[in-house]
Structure formats: C-alpha cells, structure tokens
Amino acid sequence: MFAVMRIDNDDCRSDFRRKMRPKCEFICKYCQRRFTKPYNLMIHERTHKSPEITYSCEVCGKYFKQRDNLRQHRNIHMDTCGRAYAK
Image (tube, rainbow, N blue to C red; front, side, top):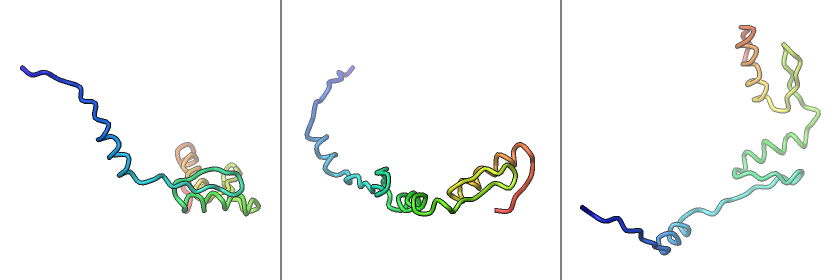
C-alpha cells in the first residue's frame, strides 16, 4: 500500500504564474467594452462609426449591423421555410 500526502508547494504555482502571458485588453473608445484581440475590437468599433449601414433580411425585414449576423439569421429561414439564399 501507499500513502497519499498533500504537498503544499507555493513555488510551483508562482513559477506557473510567471510563465503565463499577460492578458492584453483592447478597449472600445466609444463604450469601453473590452476585447482580448485587436481584430474583434476593430469589428466592434465599426458598429459605432457607421450606424447608417445596415443589412436587412429579404424574408422578414429584420436589420443587422454586421453582414455575418445576417448570414447566421438566414439559417433560421432555411430551417423553417426551406428557402435557400445566396451567400
């Protein structure tokens, strides 16, 4: 048989913390929302800069600020109506 002993070694934990990359934060200058990637911040800031640019669904007329959100929304109509749309 063997015995299990708890080892409390804070040195290992502190070494691990030092090796981790610091978390970078990119902050929206309009609403202070935080992002970990600069690309995501850039996409987000577009919604503040150009609110007049919108994409609308041909079936239900719902509006979206980002084209990708409209593409995802179209899948709802594909499932319910069985209609296909050009991407």
